[in-house]
Length: 404
Image (cartoon, rainbow, N blue to C red):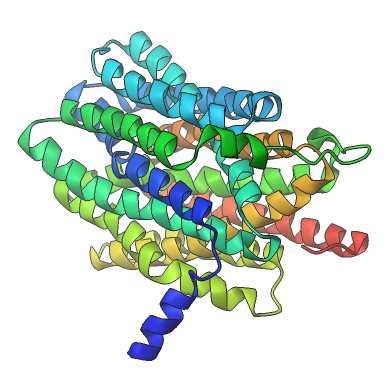
């Protein structure tokens, strides 16, 4: 047992102090991220929107994410990641508190578009900050550590969120989300000083930088990743509805089931990544494995009506997430050395924004028209297509003779 604990703690060794502070800021921010997992339930139960309306609201959410990721990448190359992250945290906090007062369909669409655009400006900036604060050999583990903080926050968030809904209602989620964003910004001011950020934020401009849009292998990789995001976002929109409508789970039980995802990542992701880094598997090879596992999690939902399969499916999906995301992030950061990091990582974030634009709405529309089982079959086919595209990326990288 002691040996296992030592191996677990050793997986954190060598990470810079700045990465630890970034992780703490992320943890505080994500611990308050309670609205997103319960958003579809809030819109249907509290505001009485139809599934079609929820789908379009989710699309406006995704469009805002797309704009925010693009804008964040541009601003990151122009004014630096520190100002982008800090501005995003404070403005997101204010927006979360304000958004609870919008209740009509169009006001909800517009307000969520603005909210997520502001929030997701920070996404490419966080990647660039992490690249600046990490040694090359520690990048994948640093990315994994930040994801650990994110998922620890998400683990606590849904569980606490379910209790808040049960006790004081959905509006309490917006207040907690807003306040925690502002607290995260204050912690950043105290721990990552702007003067130090300016020194670390000097971007090394390569000769004849490659435009991210013109990097064919990178664009194909992002298309595959967008497909992965397309099926993964179902765990935050259609699957919670499936839990409630088909398996009759309460909000508290749904919150605990979603919290299982974060708990598994907290205990197992860092040691898993440390182990996989020592194997001969490439970054793209690991992403392919994660994609396959996530696809299998949807197949499991078709196997049996037994409620226990929900737990098994969540475990398999989480394992796929643990493998695919860190190595996908690391590959994108490595590839960004060919050009300006902000633009590359902005495009990377935009690929997930596309998943929000089309994934939530498509899932809702499919459920409404074809039912849950046919929707899960469709998601499985998307996983097969994404896996095939990643295989093509792997072959092209082998032809380039560069690390993948």
